[in-house]
Image 1 (cartoon, one colour):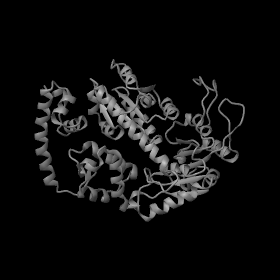
Image 2: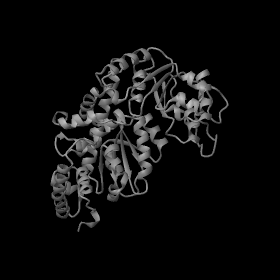
Image 3: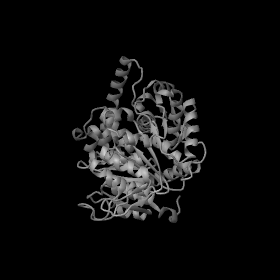
Length: 453
Protein backbone atom coordinates (compact mmCIF):
# COMPACT_ATOMS: atom_id res chain seq x y z
CA UNK A 1 0.00 0.00 0.00
CA UNK A 2 1.40 3.37 -0.99
CA UNK A 3 1.64 6.09 1.61
CA UNK A 4 -0.55 9.20 1.15
CA UNK A 5 2.57 11.33 0.68
CA UNK A 6 3.80 9.16 -2.19
CA UNK A 7 0.42 8.82 -3.88
CA UNK A 8 -0.11 12.59 -3.90
CA UNK A 9 2.93 12.90 -6.18
CA UNK A 10 1.53 10.63 -8.89
CA UNK A 11 1.07 12.41 -12.22
CA UNK A 12 -1.59 11.23 -14.63
CA UNK A 13 -1.93 12.34 -18.25
CA UNK A 14 -5.55 12.39 -19.43
CA UNK A 15 -6.13 12.44 -23.20
CA UNK A 16 -9.41 13.55 -24.79
CA UNK A 17 -11.43 14.52 -21.72
CA UNK A 18 -14.90 13.03 -22.10
CA UNK A 19 -17.98 15.23 -22.17
CA UNK A 20 -19.90 12.40 -20.55
CA UNK A 21 -20.49 12.49 -16.79
CA UNK A 22 -18.26 9.83 -15.26
CA UNK A 23 -17.22 11.80 -12.16
CA UNK A 24 -13.69 10.53 -12.80
CA UNK A 25 -12.02 13.76 -11.70
CA UNK A 26 -13.19 13.56 -8.09
CA UNK A 27 -12.54 9.81 -7.88
CA UNK A 28 -8.95 10.13 -9.10
CA UNK A 29 -8.29 13.18 -6.93
CA UNK A 30 -9.50 11.29 -3.86
CA UNK A 31 -7.13 8.46 -4.78
CA UNK A 32 -4.17 10.85 -4.79
CA UNK A 33 -3.69 11.47 -8.51
CA UNK A 34 -2.62 14.81 -9.95
CA UNK A 35 -3.97 14.83 -13.48
CA UNK A 36 -3.56 17.03 -16.53
CA UNK A 37 -6.00 17.08 -19.45
CA UNK A 38 -4.31 17.22 -22.87
CA UNK A 39 -6.14 17.47 -26.17
CA UNK A 40 -3.14 17.49 -28.49
CA UNK A 41 0.26 15.84 -28.90
CA UNK A 42 2.35 18.88 -28.00
CA UNK A 43 0.70 19.51 -24.63
CA UNK A 44 0.81 15.79 -23.81
CA UNK A 45 4.56 15.65 -24.50
CA UNK A 46 5.18 18.78 -22.46
CA UNK A 47 3.28 17.43 -19.43
CA UNK A 48 5.07 14.07 -19.52
CA UNK A 49 8.48 15.74 -19.75
CA UNK A 50 7.81 18.29 -17.01
CA UNK A 51 6.10 15.94 -14.54
CA UNK A 52 7.80 12.61 -15.39
CA UNK A 53 4.36 11.09 -15.91
CA UNK A 54 4.39 7.36 -16.65
CA UNK A 55 0.63 6.62 -16.70
CA UNK A 56 -2.08 7.93 -19.02
CA UNK A 57 -5.87 7.55 -19.15
CA UNK A 58 -7.33 7.87 -22.65
CA UNK A 59 -10.99 8.42 -23.56
CA UNK A 60 -11.83 6.83 -26.92
CA UNK A 61 -14.95 7.75 -28.88
CA UNK A 62 -16.25 7.33 -32.42
CA UNK A 63 -15.00 10.80 -33.33
CA UNK A 64 -11.45 10.71 -31.95
CA UNK A 65 -10.08 7.18 -32.06
CA UNK A 66 -8.07 7.50 -35.32
CA UNK A 67 -6.38 10.72 -34.24
CA UNK A 68 -5.84 9.33 -30.75
CA UNK A 69 -4.19 6.13 -32.01
CA UNK A 70 -1.75 8.23 -34.04
CA UNK A 71 -0.99 10.45 -31.05
CA UNK A 72 -0.41 7.46 -28.75
CA UNK A 73 1.91 5.74 -31.20
CA UNK A 74 4.08 8.87 -31.29
CA UNK A 75 4.06 9.20 -27.50
CA UNK A 76 5.10 5.57 -27.05
CA UNK A 77 7.98 6.08 -29.49
CA UNK A 78 9.32 8.90 -27.32
CA UNK A 79 8.36 7.68 -23.84
CA UNK A 80 9.01 3.95 -23.58
CA UNK A 81 7.93 3.67 -19.93
CA UNK A 82 4.46 5.14 -20.54
CA UNK A 83 1.56 2.87 -19.50
CA UNK A 84 -1.83 3.61 -21.11
CA UNK A 85 -5.39 2.71 -20.16
CA UNK A 86 -8.42 3.35 -22.35
CA UNK A 87 -12.03 4.17 -21.57
CA UNK A 88 -13.98 2.97 -24.61
CA UNK A 89 -17.17 4.99 -24.69
CA UNK A 90 -18.85 2.94 -27.41
CA UNK A 91 -18.66 -0.82 -27.83
CA UNK A 92 -18.99 -0.22 -31.59
CA UNK A 93 -15.32 0.80 -31.59
CA UNK A 94 -14.40 -2.81 -30.93
CA UNK A 95 -15.92 -3.72 -34.29
CA UNK A 96 -13.74 -1.23 -36.22
CA UNK A 97 -10.92 -2.61 -38.42
CA UNK A 98 -8.38 -0.67 -36.36
CA UNK A 99 -9.56 -2.23 -33.08
CA UNK A 100 -6.67 -4.70 -33.31
CA UNK A 101 -4.44 -1.82 -32.16
CA UNK A 102 -6.15 -1.66 -28.77
CA UNK A 103 -4.33 -4.61 -27.14
CA UNK A 104 -1.03 -3.38 -28.60
CA UNK A 105 -1.34 0.22 -27.43
CA UNK A 106 -3.07 -0.16 -24.06
CA UNK A 107 -2.30 -2.11 -20.91
CA UNK A 108 -6.05 -2.51 -20.33
CA UNK A 109 -9.34 -0.89 -21.25
CA UNK A 110 -12.62 -0.08 -19.51
CA UNK A 111 -16.09 0.82 -20.65
CA UNK A 112 -19.06 2.48 -18.91
CA UNK A 113 -20.21 2.06 -16.25
CA UNK A 114 -16.70 2.49 -14.90
CA UNK A 115 -15.50 0.24 -12.10
CA UNK A 116 -13.50 2.90 -10.26
CA UNK A 117 -12.06 0.52 -7.69
CA UNK A 118 -10.56 -1.61 -10.45
CA UNK A 119 -9.50 1.41 -12.52
CA UNK A 120 -7.67 3.06 -9.62
CA UNK A 121 -6.00 -0.24 -8.72
CA UNK A 122 -4.78 -0.77 -12.30
CA UNK A 123 -3.48 2.80 -12.57
CA UNK A 124 -1.62 2.52 -9.27
CA UNK A 125 -0.14 -0.85 -10.12
CA UNK A 126 1.05 0.38 -13.53
CA UNK A 127 2.56 3.47 -11.92
CA UNK A 128 4.56 1.35 -9.49
CA UNK A 129 5.83 -1.01 -12.20
CA UNK A 130 6.81 1.88 -14.48
CA UNK A 131 8.66 3.66 -11.67
CA UNK A 132 10.58 0.47 -10.89
CA UNK A 133 11.52 0.15 -14.58
CA UNK A 134 12.79 3.74 -14.71
CA UNK A 135 14.72 3.22 -11.47
CA UNK A 136 16.21 -0.03 -12.78
CA UNK A 137 17.41 1.67 -15.97
CA UNK A 138 18.96 4.51 -14.00
CA UNK A 139 20.69 2.14 -11.57
CA UNK A 140 22.24 0.06 -14.34
CA UNK A 141 23.02 2.86 -16.75
CA UNK A 142 26.76 2.95 -16.10
CA UNK A 143 27.39 -0.77 -16.58
CA UNK A 144 26.62 -3.33 -19.24
CA UNK A 145 22.91 -2.67 -19.47
CA UNK A 146 20.57 -5.53 -18.73
CA UNK A 147 18.09 -3.84 -21.05
CA UNK A 148 20.20 -4.63 -24.14
CA UNK A 149 19.24 -8.30 -24.10
CA UNK A 150 21.15 -10.93 -26.05
CA UNK A 151 24.10 -13.31 -25.91
CA UNK A 152 25.06 -13.53 -29.59
CA UNK A 153 28.41 -12.20 -30.73
CA UNK A 154 26.67 -9.33 -32.55
CA UNK A 155 25.11 -8.05 -29.33
CA UNK A 156 28.28 -8.52 -27.30
CA UNK A 157 30.18 -6.44 -29.84
CA UNK A 158 27.42 -3.83 -29.84
CA UNK A 159 27.63 -3.45 -26.05
CA UNK A 160 31.40 -3.02 -26.26
CA UNK A 161 31.18 -0.38 -29.00
CA UNK A 162 28.47 1.56 -27.14
CA UNK A 163 30.73 1.86 -24.09
CA UNK A 164 33.56 3.24 -26.26
CA UNK A 165 31.28 5.69 -28.07
CA UNK A 166 29.81 6.93 -24.78
CA UNK A 167 33.25 8.04 -23.57
CA UNK A 168 33.65 10.63 -26.34
CA UNK A 169 31.41 13.54 -27.34
CA UNK A 170 31.26 13.22 -31.13
CA UNK A 171 28.12 12.92 -33.21
CA UNK A 172 26.81 9.40 -33.71
CA UNK A 173 24.85 7.95 -36.64
CA UNK A 174 22.84 4.82 -35.83
CA UNK A 175 21.73 2.74 -38.81
CA UNK A 176 19.29 -0.14 -38.72
CA UNK A 177 15.87 -1.41 -39.66
CA UNK A 178 12.75 -0.19 -37.91
CA UNK A 179 12.39 -1.71 -34.46
CA UNK A 180 15.98 -2.87 -33.97
CA UNK A 181 16.52 -0.66 -30.92
CA UNK A 182 18.21 2.47 -32.23
CA UNK A 183 16.39 4.57 -29.62
CA UNK A 184 17.56 2.23 -26.84
CA UNK A 185 21.17 2.44 -28.05
CA UNK A 186 20.95 6.24 -28.09
CA UNK A 187 19.64 6.22 -24.52
CA UNK A 188 22.42 3.86 -23.42
CA UNK A 189 25.09 6.10 -24.97
CA UNK A 190 23.67 9.03 -23.03
CA UNK A 191 23.36 7.06 -19.77
CA UNK A 192 26.99 5.94 -19.92
CA UNK A 193 28.40 9.34 -20.92
CA UNK A 194 29.53 12.31 -18.84
CA UNK A 195 26.21 13.94 -19.83
CA UNK A 196 24.15 11.30 -18.03
CA UNK A 197 22.81 13.81 -15.47
CA UNK A 198 21.66 16.16 -18.23
CA UNK A 199 18.46 15.88 -20.32
CA UNK A 200 17.93 13.26 -23.02
CA UNK A 201 15.65 14.85 -25.61
CA UNK A 202 14.12 12.89 -28.48
CA UNK A 203 12.39 14.05 -31.64
CA UNK A 204 11.25 11.92 -34.57
CA UNK A 205 11.91 13.91 -37.74
CA UNK A 206 9.45 11.79 -39.70
CA UNK A 207 6.56 12.15 -37.26
CA UNK A 208 5.92 15.89 -37.63
CA UNK A 209 4.41 17.88 -40.50
CA UNK A 210 7.12 19.84 -42.39
CA UNK A 211 5.55 23.13 -41.30
CA UNK A 212 6.13 22.34 -37.62
CA UNK A 213 9.62 20.87 -37.70
CA UNK A 214 11.56 24.15 -37.53
CA UNK A 215 9.53 25.37 -34.55
CA UNK A 216 9.89 22.01 -32.78
CA UNK A 217 13.65 21.99 -33.31
CA UNK A 218 14.52 25.64 -32.71
CA UNK A 219 11.52 27.03 -30.83
CA UNK A 220 9.74 30.34 -31.34
CA UNK A 221 9.01 33.61 -29.60
CA UNK A 222 5.56 34.81 -28.62
CA UNK A 223 3.85 36.43 -31.61
CA UNK A 224 6.30 34.97 -34.13
CA UNK A 225 3.41 33.69 -36.22
CA UNK A 226 -0.34 33.12 -36.05
CA UNK A 227 -1.35 31.15 -32.91
CA UNK A 228 2.10 31.63 -31.33
CA UNK A 229 0.51 32.91 -28.12
CA UNK A 230 3.53 32.16 -25.94
CA UNK A 231 7.25 31.46 -26.14
CA UNK A 232 8.15 27.87 -27.03
CA UNK A 233 11.52 26.28 -26.20
CA UNK A 234 12.57 23.93 -29.01
CA UNK A 235 14.01 20.43 -28.63
CA UNK A 236 17.59 21.55 -29.39
CA UNK A 237 17.57 24.18 -26.66
CA UNK A 238 15.96 21.74 -24.20
CA UNK A 239 18.91 19.38 -24.75
CA UNK A 240 21.44 21.91 -23.42
CA UNK A 241 24.10 20.11 -21.33
CA UNK A 242 22.61 16.80 -22.37
CA UNK A 243 21.95 14.71 -25.46
CA UNK A 244 19.67 15.35 -28.45
CA UNK A 245 18.43 12.27 -30.29
CA UNK A 246 17.18 13.00 -33.81
CA UNK A 247 15.38 9.88 -34.99
CA UNK A 248 14.63 9.25 -38.68
CA UNK A 249 17.02 12.00 -39.78
CA UNK A 250 16.62 10.79 -43.36
CA UNK A 251 13.05 12.16 -43.35
CA UNK A 252 14.12 15.71 -42.50
CA UNK A 253 13.12 18.11 -45.35
CA UNK A 254 15.98 19.67 -47.32
CA UNK A 255 15.28 23.23 -46.17
CA UNK A 256 15.49 22.13 -42.52
CA UNK A 257 18.72 20.26 -43.20
CA UNK A 258 20.40 23.60 -43.89
CA UNK A 259 19.35 25.02 -40.51
CA UNK A 260 20.48 21.86 -38.73
CA UNK A 261 23.85 21.99 -40.49
CA UNK A 262 24.38 25.56 -39.29
CA UNK A 263 23.66 24.51 -35.71
CA UNK A 264 26.10 21.58 -35.90
CA UNK A 265 28.81 23.92 -37.17
CA UNK A 266 28.50 26.68 -34.55
CA UNK A 267 26.28 25.21 -31.79
CA UNK A 268 24.05 28.27 -31.83
CA UNK A 269 20.35 28.60 -32.55
CA UNK A 270 17.89 31.42 -33.08
CA UNK A 271 14.23 30.97 -32.19
CA UNK A 272 11.66 31.87 -34.84
CA UNK A 273 10.85 35.55 -34.33
CA UNK A 274 13.92 36.02 -32.13
CA UNK A 275 16.81 38.43 -32.57
CA UNK A 276 19.65 36.81 -30.65
CA UNK A 277 21.79 33.72 -30.96
CA UNK A 278 21.57 31.17 -28.16
CA UNK A 279 24.50 28.89 -27.31
CA UNK A 280 23.51 25.23 -26.90
CA UNK A 281 25.98 22.64 -25.60
CA UNK A 282 24.62 19.20 -26.44
CA UNK A 283 25.72 15.97 -28.04
CA UNK A 284 23.67 14.91 -31.06
CA UNK A 285 22.84 11.31 -31.93
CA UNK A 286 21.16 10.58 -35.25
CA UNK A 287 19.26 7.50 -36.37
CA UNK A 288 17.85 6.35 -39.70
CA UNK A 289 16.47 3.25 -41.37
CA UNK A 290 17.08 4.62 -44.89
CA UNK A 291 20.29 4.52 -46.93
CA UNK A 292 21.54 8.10 -46.65
CA UNK A 293 24.11 7.67 -49.41
CA UNK A 294 21.30 6.61 -51.75
CA UNK A 295 19.23 9.56 -50.52
CA UNK A 296 22.15 11.87 -51.42
CA UNK A 297 22.28 10.34 -54.90
CA UNK A 298 18.53 10.96 -55.28
CA UNK A 299 18.83 14.56 -54.08
CA UNK A 300 16.86 14.00 -50.86
CA UNK A 301 19.73 14.50 -48.41
CA UNK A 302 22.57 17.01 -48.30
CA UNK A 303 26.04 15.55 -48.73
CA UNK A 304 27.66 18.16 -46.46
CA UNK A 305 25.22 17.32 -43.67
CA UNK A 306 25.89 13.61 -44.13
CA UNK A 307 29.63 14.10 -43.69
CA UNK A 308 28.98 16.28 -40.63
CA UNK A 309 26.85 13.66 -38.84
CA UNK A 310 28.72 10.57 -40.04
CA UNK A 311 31.56 10.81 -37.52
CA UNK A 312 30.81 7.61 -35.61
CA UNK A 313 28.57 5.23 -37.54
CA UNK A 314 27.05 2.15 -35.94
CA UNK A 315 24.72 -0.41 -37.52
CA UNK A 316 22.23 -2.14 -35.19
CA UNK A 317 21.72 -5.80 -36.21
CA UNK A 318 18.25 -6.99 -37.16
CA UNK A 319 16.57 -9.81 -35.27
CA UNK A 320 17.05 -12.07 -38.32
CA UNK A 321 20.81 -11.66 -37.88
CA UNK A 322 20.69 -12.98 -34.32
CA UNK A 323 17.96 -15.67 -34.17
CA UNK A 324 19.62 -17.28 -31.13
CA UNK A 325 18.53 -14.22 -29.09
CA UNK A 326 14.83 -14.49 -29.98
CA UNK A 327 13.77 -16.88 -27.21
CA UNK A 328 15.89 -14.97 -24.68
CA UNK A 329 14.27 -11.69 -25.68
CA UNK A 330 10.79 -13.22 -25.64
CA UNK A 331 11.29 -14.51 -22.09
CA UNK A 332 12.68 -11.13 -21.05
CA UNK A 333 9.57 -9.33 -22.32
CA UNK A 334 7.35 -11.98 -20.76
CA UNK A 335 8.96 -11.28 -17.39
CA UNK A 336 8.70 -7.55 -17.96
CA UNK A 337 5.02 -7.45 -18.92
CA UNK A 338 3.42 -10.20 -16.83
CA UNK A 339 2.46 -9.66 -13.21
CA UNK A 340 3.03 -13.28 -12.20
CA UNK A 341 6.16 -14.10 -14.17
CA UNK A 342 6.72 -17.61 -12.85
CA UNK A 343 3.27 -18.77 -13.90
CA UNK A 344 3.59 -17.93 -17.61
CA UNK A 345 5.70 -19.79 -20.12
CA UNK A 346 5.93 -20.39 -23.85
CA UNK A 347 5.12 -23.78 -25.32
CA UNK A 348 7.86 -25.53 -27.30
CA UNK A 349 5.90 -24.96 -30.54
CA UNK A 350 5.70 -21.24 -29.72
CA UNK A 351 9.46 -20.97 -29.21
CA UNK A 352 10.03 -22.76 -32.54
CA UNK A 353 7.52 -20.51 -34.33
CA UNK A 354 9.17 -17.36 -32.97
CA UNK A 355 12.60 -18.59 -34.06
CA UNK A 356 11.37 -19.34 -37.60
CA UNK A 357 9.39 -16.10 -38.00
CA UNK A 358 11.09 -13.33 -40.01
CA UNK A 359 10.22 -10.45 -37.59
CA UNK A 360 9.93 -7.55 -40.06
CA UNK A 361 9.33 -5.23 -37.09
CA UNK A 362 12.34 -6.66 -35.22
CA UNK A 363 12.58 -6.32 -31.42
CA UNK A 364 9.71 -3.82 -31.22
CA UNK A 365 7.41 -6.27 -32.98
CA UNK A 366 8.54 -9.10 -30.70
CA UNK A 367 7.78 -7.00 -27.61
CA UNK A 368 4.34 -6.12 -28.96
CA UNK A 369 3.60 -9.76 -29.79
CA UNK A 370 4.46 -10.85 -26.25
CA UNK A 371 2.18 -8.15 -24.83
CA UNK A 372 -0.57 -9.33 -27.15
CA UNK A 373 -0.02 -12.95 -26.12
CA UNK A 374 -0.45 -12.13 -22.44
CA UNK A 375 -3.79 -10.50 -23.23
CA UNK A 376 -5.00 -13.22 -25.56
CA UNK A 377 -3.79 -16.28 -23.63
CA UNK A 378 -6.52 -18.44 -22.10
CA UNK A 379 -4.03 -20.38 -19.97
CA UNK A 380 -0.62 -19.80 -18.42
CA UNK A 381 0.98 -21.61 -21.36
CA UNK A 382 1.34 -19.24 -24.30
CA UNK A 383 0.62 -20.90 -27.65
CA UNK A 384 1.40 -19.74 -31.18
CA UNK A 385 -2.12 -18.39 -31.80
CA UNK A 386 -1.75 -16.06 -28.80
CA UNK A 387 1.16 -14.32 -30.55
CA UNK A 388 -0.76 -13.87 -33.78
CA UNK A 389 2.06 -15.12 -36.01
CA UNK A 390 1.81 -17.92 -38.54
CA UNK A 391 3.21 -21.34 -37.66
CA UNK A 392 3.31 -24.73 -39.32
CA UNK A 393 0.17 -26.63 -38.38
CA UNK A 394 -2.10 -29.18 -40.01
CA UNK A 395 -4.74 -27.04 -41.78
CA UNK A 396 -7.51 -29.65 -41.68
CA UNK A 397 -7.13 -30.30 -37.94
CA UNK A 398 -6.90 -26.60 -37.20
CA UNK A 399 -10.08 -25.71 -39.06
CA UNK A 400 -12.06 -28.51 -37.44
CA UNK A 401 -10.93 -27.61 -33.92
CA UNK A 402 -11.56 -23.89 -34.41
CA UNK A 403 -15.05 -24.48 -35.76
CA UNK A 404 -15.89 -26.81 -32.88
CA UNK A 405 -14.64 -24.32 -30.30
CA UNK A 406 -16.40 -21.40 -31.98
CA UNK A 407 -19.75 -23.21 -31.71
CA UNK A 408 -19.19 -23.88 -28.02
CA UNK A 409 -17.88 -20.39 -27.25
CA UNK A 410 -20.68 -18.71 -29.16
CA UNK A 411 -23.46 -20.30 -27.11
CA UNK A 412 -21.54 -19.70 -23.89
CA UNK A 413 -20.97 -16.01 -24.65
CA UNK A 414 -24.57 -15.35 -25.65
CA UNK A 415 -25.93 -17.08 -22.55
CA UNK A 416 -23.55 -15.12 -20.30
CA UNK A 417 -24.69 -11.82 -21.83
CA UNK A 418 -28.35 -12.74 -21.40
CA UNK A 419 -27.78 -13.83 -17.80
CA UNK A 420 -26.19 -10.45 -17.01
CA UNK A 421 -28.57 -8.17 -18.90
CA UNK A 422 -25.93 -7.54 -21.59
CA UNK A 423 -23.38 -6.13 -19.13
CA UNK A 424 -20.08 -7.22 -20.68
CA UNK A 425 -18.01 -6.82 -17.51
CA UNK A 426 -20.43 -8.94 -15.51
CA UNK A 427 -20.60 -11.56 -18.27
CA UNK A 428 -16.81 -11.76 -18.39
CA UNK A 429 -16.62 -12.16 -14.61
CA UNK A 430 -19.18 -14.97 -14.77
CA UNK A 431 -17.00 -16.83 -17.26
CA UNK A 432 -13.85 -15.94 -15.28
CA UNK A 433 -12.14 -14.33 -18.26
CA UNK A 434 -10.99 -10.79 -18.98
CA UNK A 435 -13.09 -8.31 -20.92
CA UNK A 436 -10.42 -8.34 -23.62
CA UNK A 437 -10.75 -12.10 -24.03
CA UNK A 438 -14.56 -11.79 -24.03
CA UNK A 439 -14.50 -9.27 -26.88
CA UNK A 440 -11.93 -11.32 -28.77
CA UNK A 441 -14.19 -14.39 -28.54
CA UNK A 442 -17.18 -12.35 -29.73
CA UNK A 443 -15.22 -11.27 -32.77
CA UNK A 444 -13.89 -14.75 -33.47
CA UNK A 445 -17.41 -16.22 -33.22
CA UNK A 446 -18.74 -13.42 -35.46
CA UNK A 447 -21.27 -12.33 -32.85
CA UNK A 448 -22.59 -8.78 -33.19
CA UNK A 449 -23.65 -7.24 -29.86
CA UNK A 450 -26.65 -5.58 -31.47
CA UNK A 451 -28.07 -8.95 -32.57
CA UNK A 452 -28.07 -10.58 -29.13
CA UNK A 453 -31.55 -10.33 -27.60
